[in-house]
Length: 343
Ligand code: DAH
Image (cartoon, rainbow, N blue to C red; front, side, top):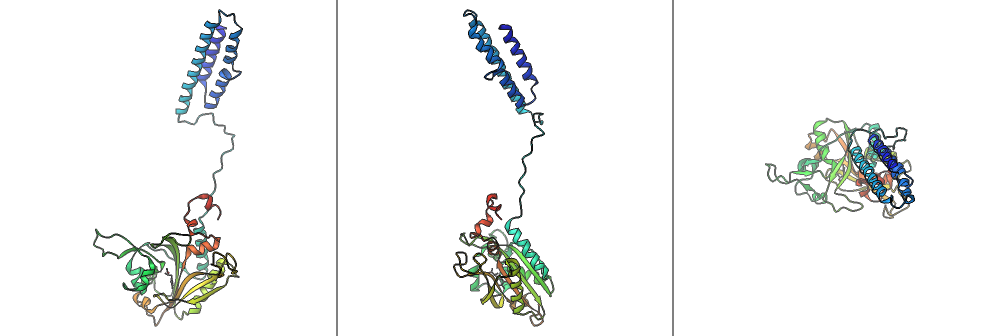
């Protein structure tokens, strides 16, 4: 029995020394110390020995067990500290497939919108989100004391330790701010859309955000009329939401257009029947638009007698919400993949 114990110990220790990975080490543990392991069975056999032999063999057996356990522990630590890939990897195991992502719903609708406008000759422009009061307001026929500034919930940048006049640098509240910038640089005739983020000091709820997407568009050419505007917007909305979409226009005032209109489309959620999304009216307001005010053209040194234009601006986040029938705009800024996977 004594010899058997010594042999078991030596075999176990040499196996442990050679072990190449955690799995192999665990097999060795089971082989010797498991329920029907070699050492376990030997220890069970002690009960059958003559009574006077038992204490001595018992002590030896415990010592062997402890030595094997210690060796297993040391080897495990050694294996875990190894940085090299060990040979314990089963290379035939199928891998865990990486989930494949997709474009964010905002990007998907934006790409579709850009494609629609490109087919009718519009180019795409991008501009700064940190904007001057001049382009966001003044150049759009909104002087400092104009009451419509109140509706714009403007966020101002702190310019106290600079030589910039306080209030002159803001986060743009509308992508219309790009009208002046573009008109100064590109000579008419021109057709441009400007998708981008805008910022307003708004209480965040299901239908308002302090940061949201707009899409501005405008065209300047000779003999442009209000019906060109109606045609372009109806074409866009029908392309995006389907041929059966109905569009209607109502009068509205915006300082940078004359006349100004608002565009409504039949609710894409209930197909115009009336639901919670359209507040049971069957119509959703999607755009502000109008014929570019002569003052805006003059400010950009474009002669309003020679050139006319139309402009429009959508709350693009709302267009996205309507496309996917999302009833809470916050869904679009939720980074949770379980939410995003649905679109
Ligand atoms: N910029 C306006 C807003 O944020 C939307 C708008 C209205 C844009 C009329 C236009 C326009 O170009 O003609 O509320």
